[in-house]
Length: 87
Ligand SMILES: [Zn+2]
Image (cartoon, rainbow, N blue to C red):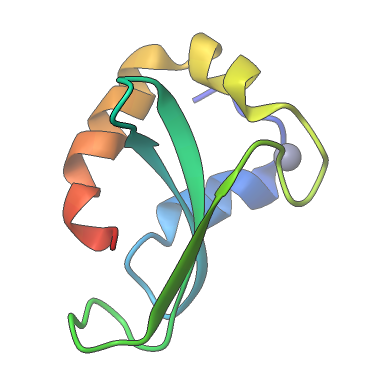
């Protein structure tokens, strides 16, 4: 994937794990977006979960919609695979 920084890549790879993660998702308007999520436990439906849509990379400030355009297929696959992780 062609992303802005390795920290964002690492955050995407830790989806579902305890701590902060970034998860691509498809909105009701069929546009892809990124969600910054925090969870208290690994892969546990009983975990405390908080999440917020983000427009810019929290670590380097890149506009995330530009990354979605560059990585359409990977983002689509990640959004489908991680759909169950979102609240
Ligand atoms: Zn970044």
